[in-house]
Length: 176
Length: 221
Image 1 (cartoon, rainbow over the protein chains, first blue to last red):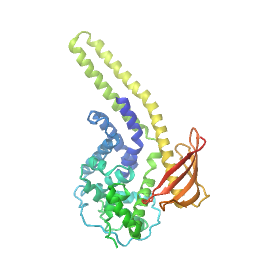
Image 2: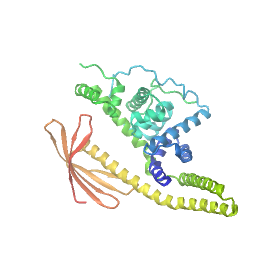
Image 3: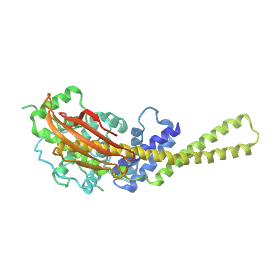
Image 4: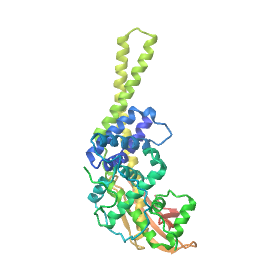
């Protein structure tokens, strides 16, 4: 039993690292988060239901641990940021987009996103999870997942159109 | 002119999250609305670039300290199980506590060793499996890129530094099928770590911009 779980865990380690690196914005912090996530998952492995997705469960642990870290470090606004203003984002003024994003521009973009948009964006666009899975991981209604995701992706689109500069009005918050 | 579609709907469309009716409605709008088409393209490109930039951890080995932490945590679990097992048994037989303790210590030791041994093997298997999945994903990405962008007769290369696998994808010819979709025949040759694989196939471009392989003629492998 343990051996099967262990094998599945090892297979998903590269993806967990990708998620954690992007979520924390650093390789070192990301690896710390991966390690803490694995330790916690193994200690609480009896809470995982065999037959359900181990990756979703571990992404959830990673995300919650990271959120606790942010709060402990006193990063303000992560929780209270008004990221869900439900204005209707109509399609307008779309320009052609051909720019290649650089690694640095994308890292800055992800770091500048409020955590609530960052986690949704990474789980959907990078990890390829469904809205339903993400809504279970983050314990959010699907509508909230959808609107946060749209906000993040529109900011990303604006970033590409602007050739790497993040527009100020795009729902970003200044870091502490 | 049709009513403008909210970006949220287009995002859900790109992520394959709309039901059949909604999807049809969006596709109808996309047929006539160049701006909406551009948004869909941008969203796809944005997600692809995000993945491309963040994929680095997939290509590098997982640090040893994470493996060590996993080994430790599983060994602790096995140790805790052995201890509670011993406790249960010693309820019946109080005799020879020393012996029981040394048996438990042995169990912990064996448990740790067992995990370490199997850990390295499953680690290798996991890496092989991850590299195989990466090869597959790279091949499919290259097929999409070649069909979308490359002229017939010109090869597009791919290479996975993690596995050493590499290959080429060459569009062969382009035509429209009875449904009016653009279709392309292509040839893909791949040198995977343990074998050579070649594929000749026809893919057609669906309304969502995805090239879907329809007919596959498996080649010599």
